Image (cartoon, rainbow, N blue to C red):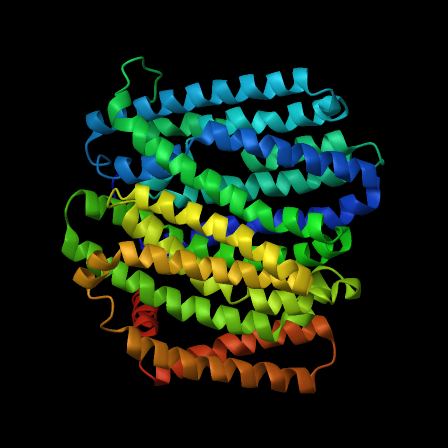
Length: 484
């Protein structure tokens, strides 16, 4: 149970799981948009978004807090059972509160009457997310189980979609299948938990210990939600639906790229939290250094590749009507590096060090800054201005989080290998740029061009880093040789 799993295997499994989560709507939506009416799609999207607010209330920032604190107890069965039962009980209370608020809103806001059935279907996610307790699997780094069951339920959901969603009025079926795909397997999670812990509801909760950090993390997540949704809201208010539609394609593609990179690196969070919590600072510093250098090796070429291939990606994912989104996609690509740096500083340094109050302060400042520059930039450059505001906001967030992490970063000596790594990456990215241009000159088919550009760019980039004797690539090659 407590066997330490390989971070590289965990990274692959978590990346695969998140890729499937991102891929599911990309596979299903083109089919659904043709079958359902525009009104049906509108009811589905509104209901899903509406329930999302109550999911946030039910979640209460507990996952982040539980991973940070629970990682310290994972080798102490009795202490971990006590901790996890208390956190689970708090989560169940917040879930009940979320449902009460949801039902009250349906009673008082008559405008929601036409959405009520679809909202109730989506509301099943609230309970299932809570009983799923994925934070326990994350603490024990059991990514193999949650990845396998995620694949299984996604495949079943796609089959159900094509079998059940056949008429323009089948948006209720679509909502139910979406819920099944995202949280249906959480019942299995709850049963499978016996492998790690005997979870139970308890009235003996140490509120003084748990509540304050949980609420601070929740406030940070709430600020992030305001920051994320403000772009489309302000763009829609100041411009029109066309501008929102164009920008939404850029954001969807950007979110996929960012999500894949984050999911690959996210597996280090429980390990870092455990090391910091047990004061194993030498191991913590080594892992943090490896994480930051790996981030640079992955995110910078991802940014360059996304910029070079933005036109092809937009045409394949959407169509030629959305070509105006190419420029905004190229601009927002720069946010990938800044957002992941900000995420590392907050989730891997500030949260384990119990500095969540700084995370809250920085998030609120970033949210206010984002709203302000959106109001300034959108009248000038519409959706391109929104993309630029995202880049600047993520940069501000990264700088502020780095500032409040500076003492830990200095102790970890993260600056030692960054210069050499960055120089290797620059030469590698030049190779990516040249490769993409050559492929575009030789191949005319867009799909084939994109596939070959991605594969060739990865090979060229990897070859340059091997020649430059990059440390991260050398470590990966050594692990590969040992396995084979």
